[in-house]
Length: 331
Image (cartoon, rainbow, N blue to C red; front, top):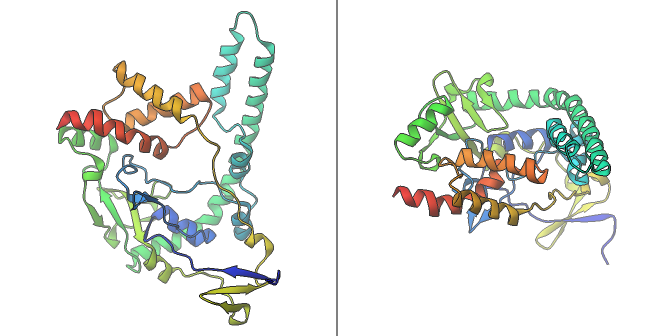
């Protein structure tokens, strides 16, 4: 019988490489970059995910209650909304819905009341997020400085895809003229002289200098761990070897640290999405550029389904269509 005062531990296997934003999450919240695979290839760098200028994010942006407690900041309202399937769409969406319902003939007062209440909850949610985000930014600032200095001093080396022009609109034009896709551009080491804090776009894992623009900026996790090792170490007396694993003596860390929270999102209506994609191709409404198609389908999710969906999730499901119906036509 296992003593309830012990917690069994096993080895962790972090991803081989991770994006710049994930380095920030590791340094600030001890969130380990875990590997994710599609057809035996790392999800982060699978060509299905490299269709947007923004780096794909393998985990949700919202911070768990445990991560916020670790940082000493209030709980993330985005995480509570995620678990509670709360209204998080822009307030303007509910304004449009209210206007639409007000035009029903005959009137539907219950549906109108429902939309008004949804709008009130959305207003409250966005106000709460607006109050919370500056606290997060203040906390993250110290770690952004640390990471930038490590890159500037050459203690860490990052790699990225350099765009043919600093301006994204100009990149679209150049790539279109040369019939190239983003994932066909070479991956290069980012010279340490390029690292200026004002040029880092953390959420996109991108870097802009006066003349250059790198996207999909990533680092080798082993190198990151050497420069930024875990800041909280366990004493030898806290561990007991059991076979190839270890047991952690009860009380060595708090109960909240032992708790794991489910991060999964509610399921989305992907069957309806595929029907809409097929209709757009049939009616010649599908844009030639995948970026434009993703934006159009994001708006479709908001207007028709009342859901916000990431660019990466839509881009992943569009890849097969574009490979078969657009890339193929250009060959």
